[in-house]
Image 1 (tube, rainbow, N blue to C red):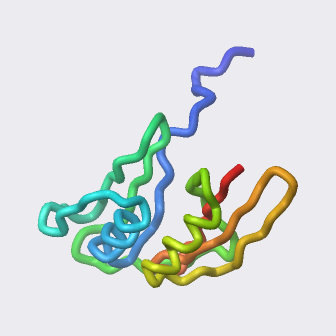
Image 2 (cartoon, one colour):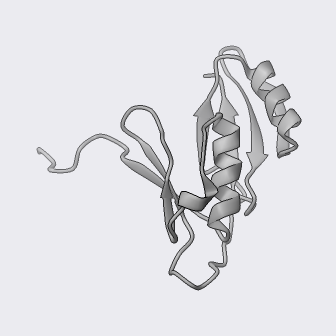
Image 3 (cartoon, rainbow, N blue to C red):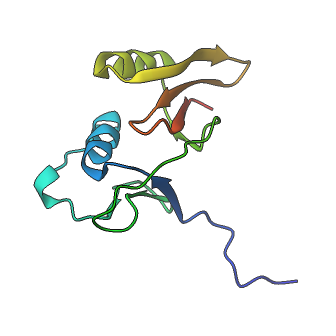
Length: 124
């Protein structure tokens, strides 16, 4: 059977309670420039490579969204050097939720965003 739905992940939506602080947090994590004055509530589209996008969503305008973060990672960002990435996140002062775990062909660690969403940084 042929599906009209593409086998392609398009956009990951991340619920946030404070769009400005979340934009700053994610942009600093990814080394992206940002202009807090150009942010227009209630969403911010991150500049992400390839097909998949990352959209920070603060919910309805003029109402602070209540975020219930998952206890598990909601997605991961890739790195070619897990130790360098870990040091970088430490230098940013971000909350590391789990130390580096290493397997034969994979290593990762978790970090929490300002709302407590768990993001995995992974080299596999």
